[in-house]
Length: 318
Image 1 (cartoon, rainbow, N blue to C red):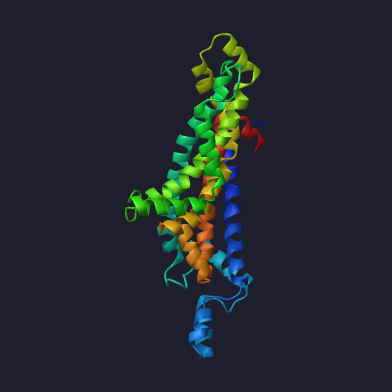
Image 2: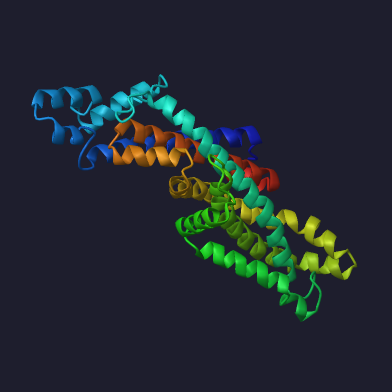
């Protein structure tokens, strides 16, 4: 039975809700089971056991991990994420401030990676596809354009994000570029360019396979202009496998933003979660994990909707 787009989206939303609950609950349990807690530093400074016990009770650390998880989930139903032991503020306010910065950074990086990666992938994939749509000349397959695009993409994909961010930071300090205080430019470039390289490699392979299809080769033989074959007839089918991994790309953007935010001093969710982990702040870590999982889930739904619009068969398989 054919699934309509609204039904498809509702199914994805139900899966996203389960994903968010599982990720945030797991984060809370893991931080509770890890050695040490938010009162560890107090134990080193305060000798009075009653004071330490009172602080542990205030933070809910006197409860078992499962009991604390149950209390936190009950509060979550009221949109209460608890109070941060590190900042003494409601977690919901803290994560709301930082989540907007992370969403803006990752969203802009995804847009830039798409705008750069897909056109370059179409160019490199169509020119490296050999005879047929691209023409019979072997010089095209070995063109300088394909070589430069491919080399740059491979280098960016192979370079670990943290090293690329450090290299950009050194470059900005030496040249003064991308170094405006509070500017999004440096973390944006650090996230967007490696992701654009991944998108370009995926799109290049998909385009090369698409333009070699018998239907497109036959259309080229009938005299259909090459530009129309590449940018109109082959673009939609070649986008399908690329959009199929966009959920993974979005998740990679959010996970990669943790290191980038820390190195470039961008006040995002990843930086806040790292501070929570260092301070064994149970509710802050759980809240950051929940909002991060929510952003990833929404990004995946967005990617799935795009796939469903490009290829209606995706709805039927859901």
